[in-house]
Image (cartoon, rainbow, N blue to C red; front, side, top):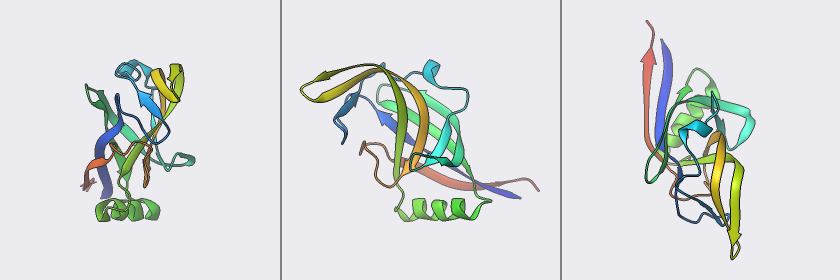
Length: 140
């Protein structure tokens, strides 16, 4: 048997200001700007890919994602426990900004390519949190 965990939540929300003074507008991210495989990283570290994106949906509120993590590795088990204990609660995105403009020190992002999604303890956008986390087993 192999152990996995599914996590879900908003990785980006639209039209609210984040800690970096950025606002991602409603049309900035769409399913056409996803690369073939979006890595799920730990704290935006490309050397620590922890999972894969299963599904990404853009709605009026933001980018809702579902991802899968393999619990066969010890760090992934520790990460799952941190999520369950409420230590690791955030989700964040890495974007390649294609079109934007500044207004009074705030960057409005109008078009961006999704590069990565990260699980993080301190997301730049406080509205982006893990909303669902459940483990399951596959195989026999």
